Image (cartoon, rainbow, N blue to C red; front, side, top):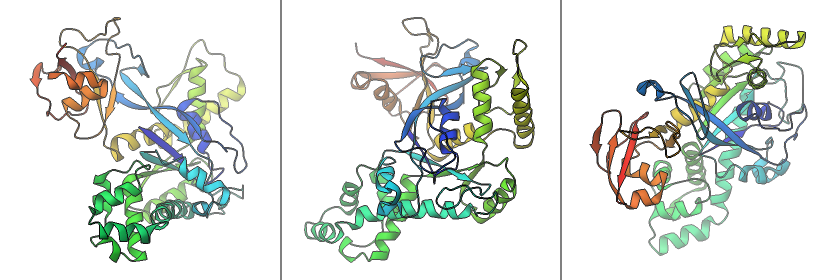
Length: 393
């Protein structure tokens, strides 16, 4: 599971990334503050099954606060893209290639319009952020198109002469881009490859990009002047897009304050509380007062919502907990130590293999720990299941 953080330069991508991961990254008010991709671990939030079992969990990876489990996922923040990135402008080819392994993208957009098309600071509200949504999709579409078009004539001719399976032939061209056969089938034009026109190639590339790199729009800087008005307008202009209001600065302030034990805050919540022992200076008090007012209006900062929406709503992944009917802990006594993210329609056997191939190879049955019922290898799992795998020793 890899989430790509994308967008043009200077829109708050690195702030979003740091807020989601608390990793140390460069945050600067100029284009290309990020050159090499930042990689880190963020978290999706899911209700922990500790509530169901009336116990307290001990996660080995991630953490749990107030019955909310935070499950680790990998994030990559690539340098800002510029128009013509697919042609190599602004080191575009390298940065696009950094996204090749991403399962889903979060496109951070400066919704307040404080940066121009090249990521340079300008007067607030003097640039239309709708241009950025169009620009990024066009760059990604042309990136896909360029890869397919490069050797198209030879590829199409060979495929036709050798009577290759069309879907498998196309799949081979995109094997490094987290593309599968199901995606190819959804995107494909219903013609023999040697009869595809240039428009057909582009149409297929657009479709494949949409299904293989689904994207959420993080409408960042929503707290700045013109941010809210632009957000409402763009929601109407792009009705099929998922657009989430975001203040990465507010989320970063909350997470850093919580890390310093100044406040109690659960990422994704719409409120926080100042701890009694906290000694806040005047600057910190003013910052938290601003964030509190922001949360009162927008309900949350949007960062955690983007993460959850990407994994659970776009990719449709489910969370499965390993456990035992008679023992919820591992050999070290850690209660419900793990939580795993699996693709939709995963089976009990898929889960066994996800934990370890030996469990899959020696699978006998599984037990739904919540219901205490035995299930077979083809049993489809649902979000929040707790499963015990029974295998041959």
